[in-house]
Amino acid sequence: MNVMNGTNMSNMSLKIIGTGKGIPARHVSNEDLSNYIDADDNWIVSRTGIKKRYVCTDETITDLSAAAALQAIEKSGLTPAGIDLIICTTIGGDYRTPSLACCILGRIGAKCPAFDINAACTGFIYALNVASCFLSAGNAKNILIVSAEMMSAQVDWGDRSTCVLFGDGAAACVVTNGGALRYINLLATSDTPILNIPVDTGNSPFVSKKRERGFVQMQGQEIFKFAVNTVENEIKHALSALKMSLEQINWFILHQANRRIIDSIRTKMRQPQEKFPVNIDRYGNLSSVSIPLLLFEMQEECKIKPGDTLFLAAFGAGLTAGSCVVVWE
Ligand code: UT7
Image 1: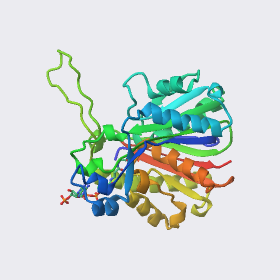
Image 2: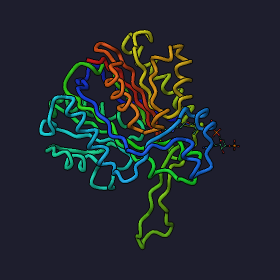
Image 3: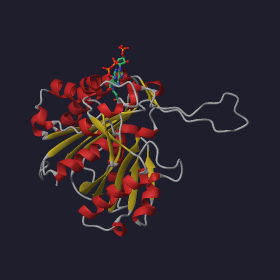
Image 4: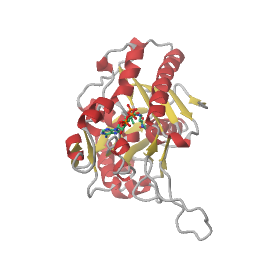
């Protein structure tokens, strides 16, 4: 696979000072799904670990994002006026344009630059790297990162092999200057057929070969192999760069695409299950939201303690991947 090595920057300035979540009211169990599609609870649980997911009914992505953003800002001890940059990670907000970040800005009443990043499921790791560059350069002091996805609008509800996998939701964090980010690495390839969502060609009279809007198409087993191999390499790469051992990592916070991907990585690393927190059973695959949502939950449950070392890794369409090491302050 044509993997390009991306940035590898240690000692970048960043620490997380508040987290939040925005989840739709409606949850749908595997059993509920069988009212709509030919889905089998046994297959879904045994092949993925997913038991339920949340889906938007009347909520917009902006609604979910604003709820997550306001909670993260409040927990950081700031107000929206104190935010001087909003970075949003999403594969599609409520509009193709303006960006979801601009919609969030208006809803929460912030006054600052705002833009979206699309690195698919790896978006949150990309956002941490971009945020650390703004902070290190002195171009921002308090940055709001919101990850938000409405995957229920991106899947074909007639395709049981994809629609059962994903869910909707948002998670946010506020980051500021600090020494928490010890290592970060981004990767990208161009392998469109493995995972994509086609856009249509509109109604231009100049197009001879019209393309319709499409839904999530993916070669699940190819992504599975990419994920396990890439995350394993990323762990080794990070540990070697930081001269650390596996035992010095307290938490492996991985993108939640499939419980079996997480278990395969854990088994290869010979690490205990408790060090690999999961939320895929309750939310399904939330794309770029799954890692910041895990951070929110672990902070709420007081699982992460100051001084803990976290390894974060994600992978997704592109294909993209990324990892980082954060010491919780
Ligand atoms: O977030 C990043 C993007 N996505 C990923 O990372 C996904 C990574 N890949 C995966 O998680 C797994 O490859 C999948 C969950 C997508 C698929 O698991 P698998 O073990 O690779 O399953 P498979 O493709 O080998 O299984 C396909 C079979 C088919 O039946 P036959 O043709 O083998 O008889 C499907 O019809 O499983 C059947 N199937 C289902 N059966 C009941 C597919 N979906 C369902 C379903 N209920 N919902």
